[in-house]
Length: 328
Image (cartoon, helix red, strand yellow):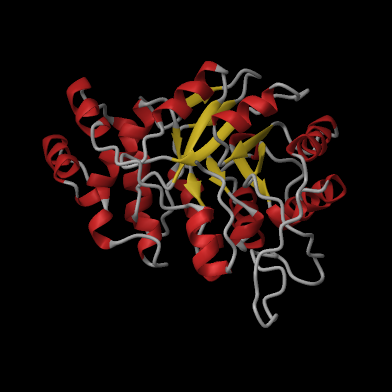
């Protein structure tokens, strides 16, 4: 394995196996984190309108380009269409706003962020619009505005045809919704991004995506760590402290995080851990440098608890006064 290891896509694109997730990276340090990550060897940046830091990501990319650290063609940049922009007339403006913020002419990949369609919120009212339709209402809530996925996807396909994005994909889709999309699309999704870690292996969904030649990217590949600080996971749910993982880490002389990321990579999925500390950034990238044995892979496979941390049926009701399930 090398630091340039990638997943080959059906269109010839090369999706880097280890990327940097931008969720929760604070704006003040984001440009420097992006610039330094690119200098370390990262070539995959996973962004989204909803993360609220795309202008800062753009600054970091621009700095790295200006310093000659990388060329634009060396970087894979992903972003995502937010829930409030699912109506076809809003898809291109949303993408153009993202491109302007990132200071780019084209994305490598543009995802539908969730199979959730909410009422439109104009840019001038609030950007990113987040989850509440009106945060100042007496009882703020999400405001569903149902749009058939085929209509949103047709508008996404137009972005490819216009040359604004190289390819399109989906996040948080299950097998049934993915199969339905495949039955009616002109341009197939290149990548499926889903929550994946040893406590949520999603074996059936991963196998189905791969059977359809759709690459898979694992968000939250380190499990509970990203969710503990926002009350969506308990401290005892950390896979990084699981005895199986720590034991394997000791056998390799590696960190628990490296073992968990390596497990994801050896399953044939890309991983996009979030980090803002230089030593963690280097450690995460180093997951490409070793391999787990079949026995070790099987031991980690056996940890699956079907524990999902990012579930709108749960956080939507608790945080946004709206019950909106998308998973069975």
